[in-house]
Image (cartoon, rainbow, N blue to C red; front, side, top):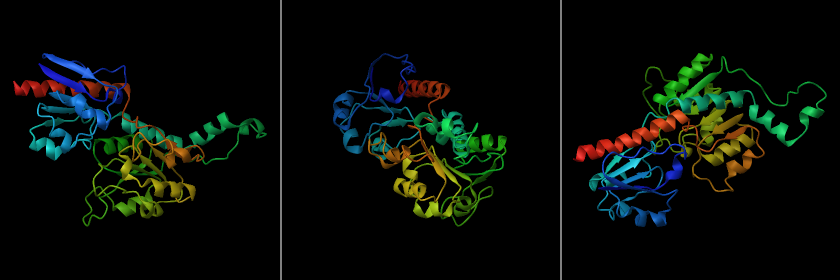
Length: 315
């Protein structure tokens, strides 16, 4: 009998339960779990299922029964992987489930930014600009073509490559950025700084590492065109949020669309969230670029398969 504890069920839409294993088990799940609650809930677990609950060395050392951590996401930043390996705890994540939905989300953000959709929509629900403009339409915000625009992509994995394919299908010019500070530029890439200078839209699809934290900072933003847009559906800490806010307020870049923030969930007084209420050039979505129905179905099935495969390998 395996004791399975799902620590943060709220990380998956309610209409997508994880298929239960075929082997004898008990299954307990919690909507969410705080740091103070984790040990008590996990102490008898053979298998922990989680998306974002922090599992550090100190905690893992107190869980001698634990054999598997099944992560309901791609990122493993919440687990001390070194400690887990030393303690003989297997860690399995899920990759590839969002390879269609995230690029589609990016394309939606591109269209929204380039056509100022949020700005025009906001005015319809907050005022009477259209009713009083005196004509059948008005032109307060820029509308620029997607076709012919240059899309700079940081990261050429499955997500970056699919974004490139979709962008090229609508006539965009695509360029890929080499690692920042690289002395050798690989075929098919341009220097990082050159991509910043050329891109009409810059989209981030690289992993979060020490080298990429605050990859987009005050200096990076100053290299971009004043008409350029930034999109981040990767990891929040790729972007220096204070520098971005300053750039948006002072016209250093034209706008930004973010699906991720440095701290999630954010504080109510997060400066970017507060600014989005006044800045028509800032589009925020709550880390849901990955969450189409088909992607979530794939995700929960892969989590279930990871658990089944692990137990089968132990028997």
